[in-house]
Amino acid sequence: MVVEQLRDEETDRIFQALSDSTRRDIIRQSMLREQSVSDLAKHYAMSFAAVQKHVAVLERASLVRKERRGREQIVHSNPEALRRAARLLDAYEDLWRGRAARIDELLSD
Amino acid sequence: MVVEQLRDEETDRIFQALSDSTRRDIIRQSMLREQSVSDLAKHYAMSFAAVQKHVAVLERASLVRKERRGREQIVHSNPEALRRAARLLDAYEDLWRGRAARIDELLSD
DNA sequence: CTGTTCTACAACCATTTGGTTGTAGGTTAG
DNA sequence: CTAACCTACAACCAAATGGTTGTAGAACAG
Image 1 (cartoon, rainbow over the protein chains, first blue to last red):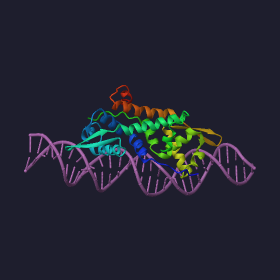
Image 2 (cartoon, rainbow over the protein chains, first blue to last red):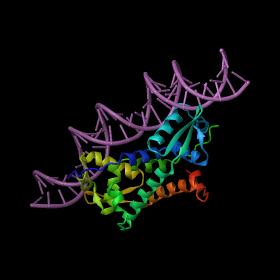
Image 3 (cartoon, rainbow over the protein chains, first blue to last red):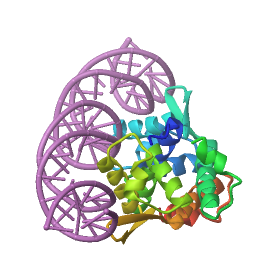
Image 4 (cartoon, rainbow over the protein chains, first blue to last red):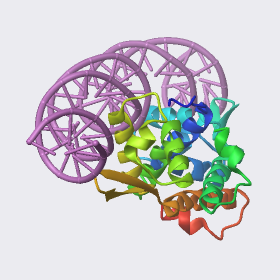
């Protein structure tokens, strides 16, 4: 029947960004305290450039934003995108329970 | 410093499975009513084999399970995995709010 | 029995992902 | 000023992703 597919690339990006444990840990780190990209990189057994790329993925998903401070780039978390993802999953749960209240969230997904 | 990375491949798989709008729609469809893989495939503008692969991705993430009924394979949703993802995001939110109650969930991630 | 339906799976392909190294430029410390 | 530091970005690579077509087997309809 080929239902017209309403795709939400923002949602795609959020879940894709969350699908890597290093990136989830970067979120956690930047929630605990704001750190520069170099500071973050010290936590992981990979190159600085790799961490830089992970931060870029989080940034495209709006889960994090960077703020230049001198020569450093400070990584701030953005909990609103996380909340959005959590609410979307809640809506699925509601759907399963037969509560239609939030189905519109799913349909507009 | 190379902190030992506690990876949770199950969590990886759940978020990765959720990062595609076709797969999110398959979850929604199978929550609305249990359908065979062929039934599901009729909703999308792609081959049966492609939908079959999407279902397999959801299955590896435990978001869905298949039950053979005659020649058909009926797809059931499994809301527990969804709930697990939602709780994890809630825990991040708590962390951001400075509530430490659920930090252990994050640390064991 | 025969033909159709549903599923499984292999092979293939283009693109994306997650990592690397290397180069270069802006900023700060001494 | 110079050296060290932080970041940006390009080029490259292997593996995973998301799609395709094709083949084959099992189950059902008539």
